[in-house]
Structures are given as structure tokens and as C-alpha cells.
Length: 479
Image (cartoon, rainbow, N blue to C red):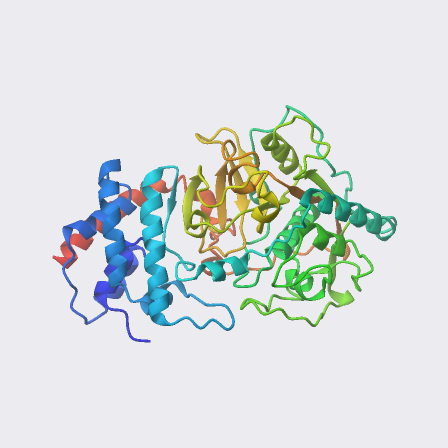
């Protein structure tokens, strides 16, 4: 691939896909003569760093679409380390067209709100069908009843398995109605959430989320002595009740994890003994589960929120969700097809254009599984905090926030439609195993192993001051 020109580096900077400091560093080491930046283009840079009024932001949006037309897609792919699904055949010209379409969508949506920001990212050159391939949650034609049926099967299957082997606190169950909820909950900060995974082009969100829910309850039930990433590859290759990279169900996955007859080893291995291999989207159908690597099993599951409102009465869905997540991280569902989710960068999502769910479409609307890790009632916009499985280079270091109030009957993106939670996490090994070491630079973590998003708000003023200084240097440098 050809070297990146200085002019393209500057365009990348203007599109908020590369920090100014990195642009200056790489451009100064490039012999290519830098082209002059037009004042209108610099306006877009000012916009990205928050120095413009609302009207000025709107005037800048059209310029962003013009800039991206000049950007070679190969250079964009290089900066974002973009990969494509196994068997992808689109040409560079077709990828270029998709990149331009993404830029236009962002330019249209960003001026609508100041609550959140969208930006180009590693998914901006993917087609709609390729994006859909990531979203592998499967629900039946009658999703509420289907999940209830699976739940009964799961709990029945777990009875014999866990009766004599449980070492955890199995009291975690359906949350009881209460107004005495904490103002905020964050299970990542509490130490019950492992690092953010990247599913790539495999529709295994259901497997990653089921594993994440098990990781959380096991950490809680062992008093945070056992926080270990579990093998979602085992779910993909070994769980015959689901369909690997094509699609699957959280509830069915947790049924498998109880040690049902379909699970030859009686639980789930650790991720480091059975690592992920299906990033490209092709399912590995041979199961390599080994009882010697068995790490965790669960004692059944609960459904604190169901689509058909079973046993929920008149309690608002947002309250039910907070009651559930106050106890443990829970697996939930959403619609993730729209540009707002694909290009989410930061902030609290207060609109779901293109991803709204209601009673008429709920069975087909929910297509992506994620992990609810907390909420905050005291923020200017009260929000839910959610862990995604698209890597730390998406969103807020792999997480996103959604407003608690608003949207349709199931909340924004349908996130309040359903929640599934393991009853109890059982550390079969009876060992204290630390979370595997992760390169902080690669995984978007701080030097202390915490998510970089946790410190983003406190450092915002410093970054803005640094950005303003860098902007002045940039103008001096190019002129």
C-alpha cells in the first residue's frame, strides 16, 4: 500500500479520525508537499473540538462530505486497521462510495443534538449487509414466551448439576420491587466486568454477552476473587442450540452453560484455554471443549424483564432494568442497524432514528446482544451504561450510554425489552484466577487496567486546551 500523503493526513484530522499530534508527527516525517487547508475545511476541525456555535456547526457539515470525497479509501482503511468479512468482494471504488455515504449520514445527524457525537470509524466502509452480519441475536416468533420456555428448561437442567457442587452465593434472583435503589451503579468500576471484546464479523454477540453475564455474577458470588474472561468460542462451536456466527440466543446459551445434556464438560472454559478464532465470520463447527479447562457453570437463569411483560405489573421498564442491574450485570437486547449506533463516538444517546422498536416490530427489531453494566440517575441526562462487543476503538472505549427516559415503549433502541441474568456463578476450579493481562494500548485501557472512558469526563477540559494549542500549531505549520 502506498505511503499516506500529508494532505490526506490533514483530511483525516479534519474528519476527527486521527489526533492532531499524530498528524503533525507523521506529516513532518513525510517528504510530500502539504497542500493549503482552506478556511472552510478548518471550520470542520474547529467543530470537532467544540469551538463553534450551533449555526456554525451546521454550516460546517456540508464541508465534511466534500472532504471525504478527496480521501483515498485505502488510506482510511490503513488508519483504522479495517478488515472485511470472509469472502467480501467489494472493489475500492465501492468502498469509497460507502465511506462517502457514511460521512453524509454523520453530517446529517450530528447537528440534530449536542447530547452525543458520531464520527467515522472502522465500520464506515462496511455495507448495510456486512453490518447486519455482526448482529446475531436470535428471537423466536413469540419472543417473550420463547424466552420463558427456555428459562424453565434452563432452571430444570441446572438443578441436578448444581445441587452438590455450588460454592457461590445462589441468592441472586429476580429483583424485588423497591424504591431504595442506589443513585448509580457501575459494575465495571466495582470489578465485575472483564475487558471489552471485539467480535469482528462473526454474529456472536449472543455468545459474548452470555459469557459476560456469567463473568459478572461469578465475580460477585466469589467476592471479586474470580474475574476471568470466559470462552465465547466454546458457545460458538459447541452449543448446538445456537447457530455460531449466524445467530443465537442469550437464554439458550445460558441453558448450555448450566451443564445440560448438550454440554459434554458441564460448563464453560476460560477464554485463555479456548480462545476466539472466528473473527472473520466463518463458524468453526468442530468443538474443542475440554473438561480440564472448565472454569465456570451457572445455576440457572432469571428473566427480570420480558418482552411480553410477564409478572411485571405496572412497574416502568426503566425501573425494572435498574432493579436488575443493581444486583449484577445483565444481558439485554437492542436494535443496532442504524447509523447512530454504527458511528457512535461519545455522549448520551437521546434519539434512535432508524433503530426504534415498538409492539408492532419487536420480534424482528431486536438483533444485537449487549451487557448492561450500570446506570446513573444524577447525571444531567440520567443514563444506562452498556458494554458492547465491537472493540475498544468504538464508542467510549467499547461502551456506550443511553438515556433512561424516552424512545418507544421499550426505550431507545429497544434496550428495555428484555433482560436475562444467570442465577449464580460457580467457580468450578475453586481457584483464584486473575483477569489475563491485556496490553493497555491495544485494548484501550488505562495504565491501571481500567477503561479509559472512566476518566474521560474529568480530563475533557485539559484535552480541549491541548487541542486548541495543537490547532494553533497546525495553522502555523501549514501556512
